[in-house]
Every structure is written in structure tokens, then in C-alpha cells.
Length: 208
Ligand SMILES: C[S@@+](CC[C@H](N)C(=O)[O-])C[C@H]1O[C@@H](n2cnc3c(N)ncnc32)[C@H](O)[C@@H]1O
Image (cartoon, rainbow, N blue to C red; front, side, top):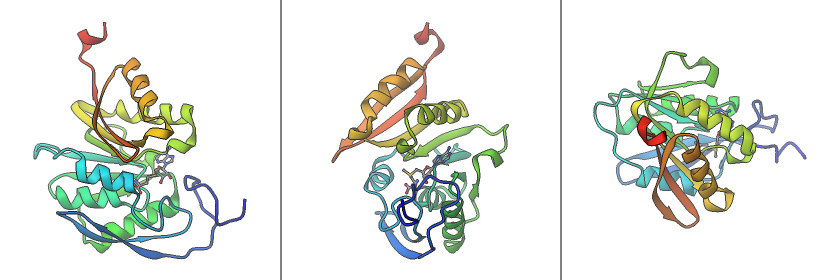
């Protein structure tokens, strides 16, 4: 593997930096985002991410803490930060270059409510009302399962998670697996090979 095709989820990409700007145009948000080599979908905002942002739910005004799990350069975090100025958006990733870009992109839009940090820097006591993610499927099934359970367990009692996953990368088997682990998983939408999944905690007596 040469330095240009290193996996996007490594913590410290060694590919030579070559920043560029990509546009994210949504009906309510218009962003110019800086991207770079070594991060996910550097040449354009990923189609799945766009689908999630276009078709994910509206968040009630009572929502305080939102998590963007695997934020990359920040299309989800920055959009949610703009849409919900009264909420705090936590943006986390293990790829340091992506984190830096997310921080920069939030700063460029003069955001005061997007906090970008490594997963281990998120305060342990914090629970999230809403988790949004285009998750890192390619880290492998076991690691992905572990990652999702870790963060789903940080949903507040009435919280929900919203995931976009490609069908050919196993969205449907992931949905079934989440059900077996105590998470109601409903398909909000399906388009062009992507599935949008809404995940909530099962009621206790439903599980038994
Ligand atoms: C499919 S990309 C989505 C990036 C961004 N949200 C977007 O929509 O463009 C998944 C991201 O998850 C990150 N990731 C991988 N392992 C992770 C982990 N254990 N915790 C948090 N993020 C992780 C990757 O580095 C990558 O940036």
C-alpha cells in the first residue's frame, strides 16, 4: 500500500496533506468543508451522509447532547450544529487528521456548539439524546459491533440513534443483530443501496 491509499480510519494518516474544499448544499444548510487526503470521502460529501442529513429526523428542541460518531471532516456535526444551535454536538473520530479538519470546519462556520475530540476525551458521565453516524463499517464486523454497543449504551433513556449504512456492506444483518442485543431497529428509509436505520432501546418487558 502506498501512502495515498491508506485506510481512512487509521489514527494518523501519513499521506502528504493536500487540502481541498467540498460543498454541502442542503435545503437548510450551505457549507464549504475543508477535506484532505487520508480521510473518508475527501473528494465529495458521501452520498450516504447526504441521504442521512436529508432524511434523518427533526430533533425535538428538548435535545441537549448530540453525538456524531465517526465524524470525519464533519459534514454531519457541522450540519447538526447549524440546525440546532441550542444543542451541543460532540464530534468524535479516531483519525487525527479528520478530527483536525472537523475542528477547522466548525470554526469556519463560527460554531459555538460543536465540540471535536477523541472518543476517550468525551466525558464519561455524558449521555446523548441523539446519535448520528455513518459508521466505519470497514473496520470489520466485530470492531463495529463493539463500537456501536459502546455508544448506544450512552443513549439517554428516550434517546435514539440514526445510522446510514450501505446495503451491500451488511445493513440488514446489522439491523437484525442490533435487535438481538436489545435495540429496536427500524428502517426509516432505503434509497440507492443505502439504508437509514433508527435505533432505540427496547422496552424492558419487550426483551423478556
Ligand atoms: C464512514 S466514515 C464517516 C465520516 C463522516 N461522518 C462522513 O460522513 O463523511 C466513518 C468514520 O469513523 C471513524 N472511526 C473509525 N473507527 C472509529 C472509532 N473507534 N471511534 C470513532 N470513530 C471511528 C473513521 O476514521 C471515519 O472517519
